[in-house]
Length: 411
Image (cartoon, rainbow, N blue to C red; front, side, top):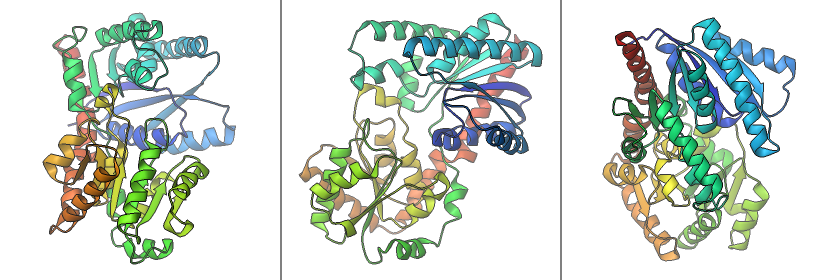
């Protein structure tokens, strides 16, 4: 169903960020496909060369996306962010008033502050795209003390943002339950669950390249365990290195393939100290569009994330990518809706503890799963049902706008 509306999508990242390329622009193209006129506002960490700006503007214009940008200011932290919010509001209000933009779509909390102020100063509706429980994330990461001043102030601001929202988007069913129970969210405000989705066509295009990639990597006849994404921070690098060491002891033919933007020296050092030789692993950085080719060479995939309250709202894109590639997944319990996906669809194994015994049991269990007839297709079927950009993400995003337009017409 097409929906005639104009939206301003505010993202507090630069256009070149991999996250913007893989988790913002694909969704915006889905909105355009639904008849929505989209203006994207990003905050760039440095001045882009004019030639690059013109190139991006032209490329996005061919996809019916208009791109505007403001400068991102980093230091001093709070004043810089407040300055960016003021600049964003100034531009957003002008666009709403002069161009008739009906919806301001905020990706996470800082853009939501811009959207809420814009709504106060002009006639627009606000979509709060909640990418995570921001105050709890800072506490769980040890950046802020629990109950400290910054946490309390941010929670107070969050309540205001929720109360200002005309629609909310969350990544998981568990997050929706928490947001819906908030007294600050009106009962009539729609809350849509839209997990981090992937374009399954990218994975279909590399069907049949498994042996080519395995030959290219020199891993013919080996069991390849893959990890895609950042190391460190929320991602438990030490535990992941321990897991790979156990996998290698169980089966010396095991090859670890790490596709990451993180420092390769740190990853190499962790694996080397655990007895893996240079021929037992590869740490490589590739463009996002190349990830499906590397996943095609693997036999199983894994992901360990620090379990905490804030992670109930997390939807790791790598899980969707693994399943789209037909790979079984080993992941620790307590991360978003991963428990439900892996156990209900039987496409992977939940790790209950970070011990050598638990790692060995998980590997054995996933090897048993892999032997079931049609297992790889079962993984792909889960990806289609739960994480397909065109069949799940796009329609759900458009449904939010349809509800807002209908509410506006009724009101």
